Length: 442
Image (cartoon, rainbow, N blue to C red; front, side, top):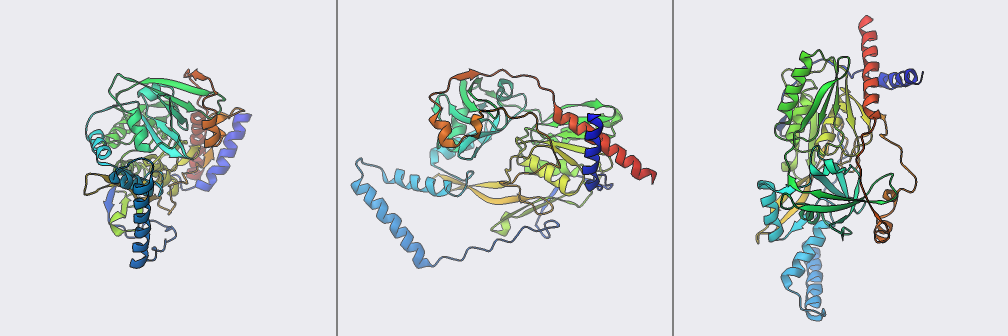
């Protein structure tokens, strides 16, 4: 009786999505100069009024006075370069949590890490509410196997408290030689004790498309763990194999998918939307920072019921796919609100070998919704499990760090849990089938 009630409720919600079963065509997404970026444009931000040259000189004079005062009066002798770098670091970090100044050494390290092979634990992280936070552990990586979860708040790395840590500093601490251990201490929603994980670093190699299978009669399930170069091709292969098995509906699982390549997110979206439809666009202060992605797929799959599973670990590219298919009413979103990482960072080298990582634009869904800081709200909210009492993760950053020395550390044991979100997605698919059947009979 309870299950029937759920299906009736889902049907009522689904009636608002009567266009969830469109038919048309699609192929890889295309980047082009933006023209009309979607059905609803976000409110236009008026350009900042140009500062008068005299005002800028006055402010620089103030900085020069402060610099001179520190050099002459500070108790210890400090190099001018260190003072300048410190000022630049503070200036850029004050903009947002993703912008950062890198001295020449840090910038050189970043280039090695992004261009070469390195050891890590396999998590995406961000600064959220002034605490280092796990966006998501990547499937089958050391962090995932150890039991780290999306939303875990990292309060220590190798016993060093992370208060005030930058993203770059955190990444440096977590990365290292494969085979070496790193200890990560976290606060977890629903737990009243600190959890301590000792994780062995490894070379991170990720399989993006996982576990394609039939979960029930003709209902296909595919887990997409990250958006990398081969993800769209691997997804296409998985869909083709499931279609051979007779699939007539799809559950695409983007939970704990921290994102990845923007162009791949466009390609994945394009497999399920009509040709020419808007997928995502970016807007910045300058025209050169604006991009638009539309569907170019020639044989899209737009005719079967589709549900996308999302949660707080779904970020960036995952949110682009979820937002596009939700705006076009192609899929019903089930789960929890996504992370809200919808900004684009550009690394700008400076003359002395240092660099600035600067937020230069933001993502917008086809209907003009800003993803950044907002996230994507699912059509049907389903929590994975209830929150327990005395939840340390709900405390303020100050309270968290004050209690760190007092709390005993507990080893974590990863447990298999009943996936009620997946079951809800299956129920939604069944309801969509009923609706489609009723429409076809009319």
